[in-house]
Image 1 (spheres, rainbow, N blue to C red):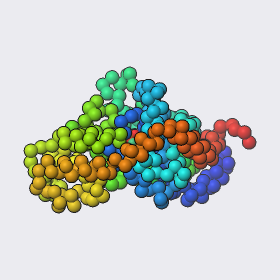
Image 2 (cartoon, rainbow, N blue to C red; image 1 turned 30 degrees about the horizontal axis):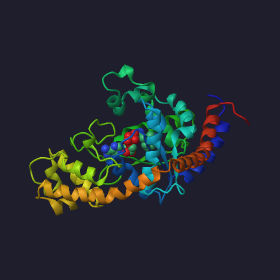
Image 3 (spheres, rainbow, N blue to C red; image 1 turned 45 degrees about the horizontal axis):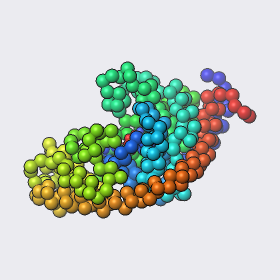
Image 4 (cartoon, rainbow, N blue to C red; image 1 turned 120 degrees about the vertical axis):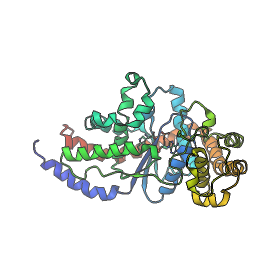
Length: 355
Ligand code: AMP
Ligand code: TRP
């Protein structure tokens, strides 16, 4: 396979650099509209807490979004909306990086290389592709199929070791680890890409639809009543919770009583997450009572928690130029942080570069 002496010195340097990047976090949200309570409780809220202890890159992944059709003006508006949601939720763009993916071309470049590392067989197993492509797989974009390779590139362009996400992203992170490992193995650079640890945190790692407790709350559900959007006002939140699907039984006394009652489980889990308590504590308080009273408490908790975020988002969105400046500055920092990793990758592969 040729002379590896150059590589091993890169490797030695990067194994040392690994110590420095161990505490790096990367995570992303697609700017596909309808940012909802699941995105908030499963992801963004946890990021707010992690920013104190880690060096963080939070990315609006517009290149991922275009794996399905996006109207250009909507893509622009949705990108600003995700950035505003991050800032309004309490992520500080000065101490962390908030950027949009397309401004950092290192992601796309590394993704191409990973297209040549990942095996078709691995990608064929991805459940999200199967769900999103639906029955007519022939018509899905090629980008949708290699989506997880771009996701691996997002993370590994910074050699980030920790990725806080909701439960639905676990399979993609396993694939990212397979890619990193195969790269390290094939080019004989052990430890070059770190192992990625998924951080799936909090009570609500999988928030379900308000209309069907067996389906996850999703941006693309055609029913707006299925989700609480971060842009909903207090009346909309209260109405959606009042109309949320339930069953005729009173709330159970313990979590074992959730068996066969996914809607009850979901609402109690959301309440626990919003009030920083556990499901067991909530059931201790409300077990045995009917849904009517509980839904009032839940609506109050949701409004109390989300209203300040929504109004701050609206305030930020009134000045789109300022959001764009934040994204531009974040992009500059992100390019600088990922540049040395990409330079090493090019050298490892044997690409001729300026000396
Ligand atoms: P996406 O909307 O697919 O870009 O997801 C952005 C982040 O929100 C990811 O970390 C997801 O895992 C998380 N997420 C999306 N939907 C949910 C949900 N229903 N419950 C919990 N987390 C979610
Ligand atoms: N695929 C993720 C989602 O839809 C978004 C994402 C893209 C991401 N790149 C990432 C999440 C890197 C974590 C790390 O939820």
